[in-house]
Length: 248
Image 1 (cartoon, rainbow, N blue to C red):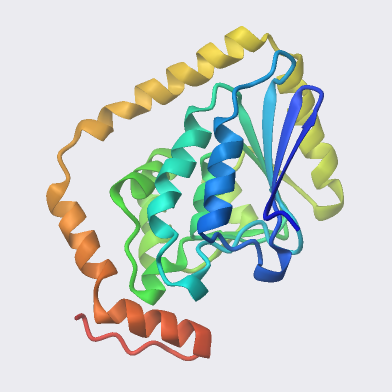
Image 2 (image 1 turned 90 degrees about the vertical axis):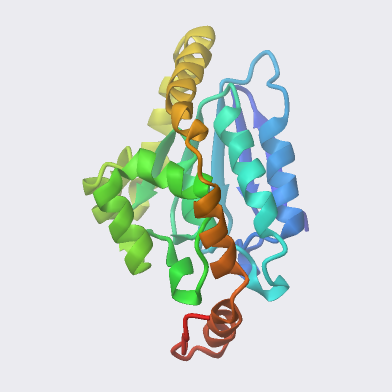
């Protein structure tokens, strides 16, 4: 069974994370396949990328059963989605946590079910996301909401994310597909050259902060990532017990 399914349906390129038994957690192969799917050159008739997950969850983030090996591939994969000339619609029916939250928020428009939850729980296992992943959250959410999401690490219901302006459309579970279809159909009917120009303009305007020096921040993030606290946090998560962090 493929871990990522790519289907071209007229103007739509549907990309589905297909690891329902793992809550669509991202391992090295899945991240690589997603990047390939987002980097595919659009065909003449393609207008929209649709990102979704199979099974009860949208995406539970990194597959921690393999340690942190997949972490280095997250940023290039998300960057490929962000830089795709096609507008991307994320259809979030269930939990979008950590890397899954970032996957959703790197889509241009998110349509979510009221049953979904979003969050960046990595602080609860001792990990700090890298500069560019935090940058995206601050861009989308603003600093106040970003602090709530990152520093607490608790998942937020889709309704709260909608109130914070991180979600474009919110629908009851039974209405999610029709709400998403309305957005997809609208995008597909719009002028493709204008859509590509508009998306590229927005992305370019947000790139100015990429030039901010952040070597010291990278050092802090690396220190957290390589700490004993991460080993304890991951072990505690699998054992379903509170972590005993020591700040080392």
